[in-house]
Image (cartoon, rainbow, N blue to C red; front, top):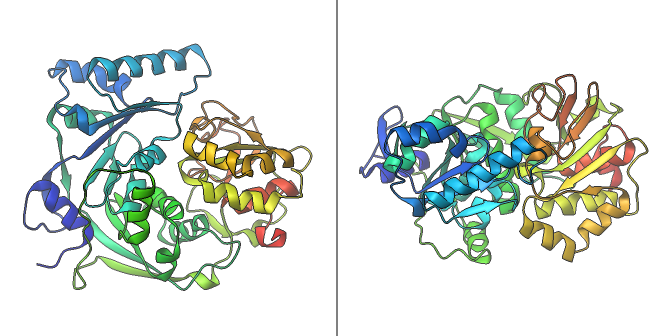
Length: 419
């Protein structure tokens, strides 16, 4: 029976020759990621009540990123508890203040083609860029995963998202996924897999593909898959991955729930206006909207190619008076690379404040939260009310290039004017 990539991934994890969309399977989890915000501190009571024994610690990863580095005593206590929990339960794959979890999972070789990954963060679907069935789960579900090594799942239907043509200069993967979400709606792919394909997707670097898969959940998707190719294998090799993997691909005659087709060559820079990710407009429709803050970072917009795009826009320019530009590289590795390449220096010279690799500003816990009435243009992935601080603030989502252009102008601007 022909199968989609999603069906093949879950069939393999369930030890079955084939599965169909809609079936319930019990899947072996290859990587279980717990973060500091919804991981051990929330799981611990139920975990201990049901035996308190991690079945496969070698398949578990614990990452402190939302509250690290801690900004207050409560956050410090949560990070300390998470650190102790990992040590007491034999989880040696522990990371603290190294960057957002999804970036670390990719860099450290946990997001592998042909595998299943779950995490206590909804953007675990980032792993789909590697042909890995990555999805977010709740703390209760994760308790079951660490105790049994398995998770039951309903096999999702797959919608194929086809991007033909090539992106123009100044238009980035963030524009592509924002436009997709704007078309589908915030619940348009609920409990479905989005499989991204087409010339524009194949042309993207792995960093930019990760942005696409990361935001699949903003359309309600369970997973956001991209077929592995030579770029995928090269990324893993370049990052020192020594784990074995076996990629899978959708059969040509597989049954898809639908096909949505776009033309990348006609795409222009996009912005998601407050307070929903699917409230998407071409930036030209919002030109001149005043900004108080610009943010470049997170597991969506702080990778090396994002910092390069921003530096290209800002080189020789200054951040506008009255605007704060915060830059948080997506990992310590990217921080070092960007420093060596002179990107952080160029951004700082333009007036940016360089932050530690952290989720703090994106999730509104520290490192640049918003005050009442303030507006921020952000390269992150959510603009819900209160997401980056005050519930009376306004967050606009855009590409790193658009963020940089808007920081320089003090208002929303098209980055192509600056290139």
